[in-house]
Structure formats: structure tokens, C-alpha cells
Image 1 (tube, one colour):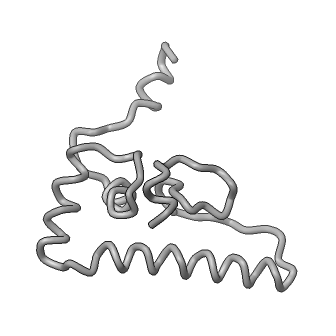
Image 2 (tube, one colour):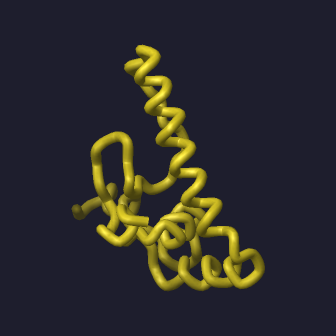
Amino acid sequence: MTGPDAAHTRIDTSGPHPARVYDWWLGGKDNYPVDEEPARGILAADDTAVRGARANRRFMHRATRTAAEAGIRQFLDIGTGIPTEPNPHGTSTCSPRAATS
């Protein structure tokens, strides 16, 4: 994309982003070395971060499945950051490594 809108679509990788740090913990592909550094630093201080991120994803899946089984057919996904596997919306933006985690 070129023109005035191009600047708005560029990803800022000059500093870490919480969604990309979370993606790194889940084994995703949508993160950069600038995100890996704080992800590893947090793990050094709290080795439960990855386990917590994975537990959070499992809870989201259970809650979404339960709501769908109860007849809810519309979901509003607000402020979730980067889609990552396993993704209940059916889109995949992460590596196969994360899907098996």
C-alpha cells in the first residue's frame, strides 16, 4: 500500500507490544525480537507466565463454547490483541507449534 494511508498500516516494531509478548508466550509467529526480550525477562521473574497465558486461552475457549452451546450466536471480541492458535473464530495467524501447546 502506498499513499497517505500507508503510514497507518505500518507495524511499529521499535518497542515491545503486550499482544506480541503474549503471542510469543503462546508460541505464535506474530512477534519480533523486541517482544521476545521482555517476554523472556518476565519469564525469568515469573516462570508461570506461559502456563498462565495458556490457561487463559483454554478458559476463553471453554467460555465461548459454553455460550455457543447455550444458543448465543453473536460474540463481540474487544481488545484481544493478535489472533493466535487455537482461535475459536476459525482464522489462524500463528505457527503450528502454538497449536499443539
